[in-house]
Length: 317
Image 1 (cartoon, helix red, strand yellow):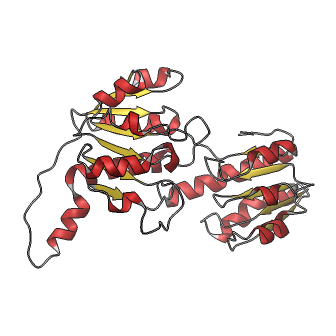
Image 2 (cartoon, rainbow, N blue to C red; image 1 turned 60 degrees about the vertical axis):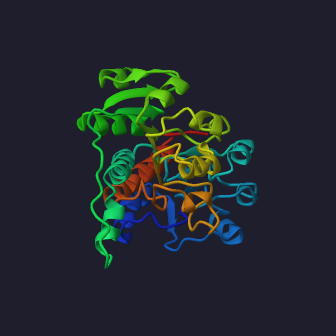
Image 3 (cartoon, rainbow, N blue to C red; image 1 turned 45 degrees about the horizontal axis):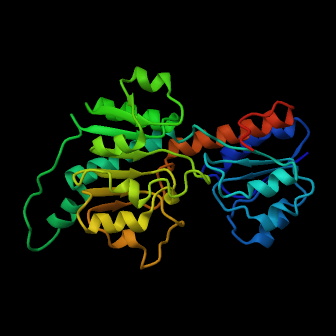
């Protein structure tokens, strides 16, 4: 079979070569492109005769997938696969694998970082102290004793809950199915609206799909306390970001830490959250640490090897 890695995985080339060696030893071809492209024609050119296509978080659109007549697996080096045309892949009997789990720690740590920035005004304090006329100190808040609502208690949500617990927070959660591991942490499951009403900090950890698009609508967001903060390191369209910006500007929410948006950065100048009060914004980097990139590459190549050996793993479509 022919295996093609369409884009870099943010690890040294030497590591790619090491991970690819078992593929070659099994008698398969491996091709690696070390420059990213978003051009559909180039993506098709690179992947057209591949049996296994390996990608990261680069969009893999319908016009490419529908022309892949030889491909049996799209192996996504990412947790979410909403940037792949899944319907077309299914129609062509192309399986999709993902690399779930590689970024649990990195995402959870950024959630804590955004919360601390909002609670202690770290970014604002840095700006203030560099001014010629120092405006004075900012009194903050502690996480200890606060009620943290975890929306989505999958692996990342659970890891986030563990870190908040270490700070002394009280845990409540919402999920379609209740998890024993979450209850073991002391997390209490509640209906969504009750969670929103009771939480001082809300952290979102849902996948992006038709059911979760606009999941936190204006009608849901207004249930939150005016003193509450919202953290989203999951997917942007899960939240009505226009409504979120308006509520922040109306001081009906105390703050928001946002890593994901309705589109990938750079954001247009008129994007509402760019002009909302009390926000800390990061450019979709929650997953992006040196350690996570190594683990991602290892999981992705393991997925390829398992498929080549007739033992597919991490199949999500």
